Image 1 (spheres, rainbow, N blue to C red):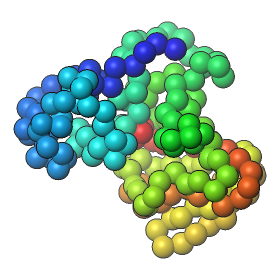
Image 2 (cartoon, one colour):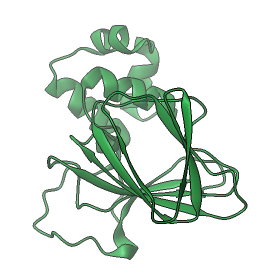
Image 3 (cartoon, rainbow, N blue to C red):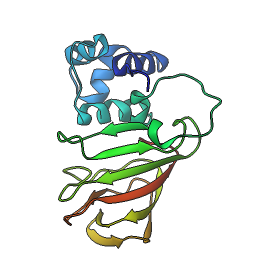
Length: 184
């Protein structure tokens, strides 16, 4: 897999929206100084900062992690998926199952280790999501409800619905989900 330059990607998306660093800072609540350092590659943004930037730029978060290289290849090999690893233990991960996030739908695999969750707080995105549990069981915190989903269960999550995924078991859980429009 090619090295991804998150700093360059953020800068290009910002410039593509004709925003100055100061304007983006006002939209995100992140200081101009930090944004400048991120774009220069001298500071590493947290996932929360990246979420704020992607929301302000109205682009899927995942776009920061991919190279903007057009591909004619429609096949994604299991050993060549684009991945986002969130936890310090490198065990919680999202894998992009579609070649990129440029189409009208995004298809991903989420691997949740035992006793971990997708985030601390509930979050939402503008896309409609459908998820299918392929391994283990998981709790979906959806708005003010907790739904237990087992292997073979599926769920539809309406756009802008606050949610998070939590594995309370001692075994790995895997969930395949599709989001349209892409919002990661």
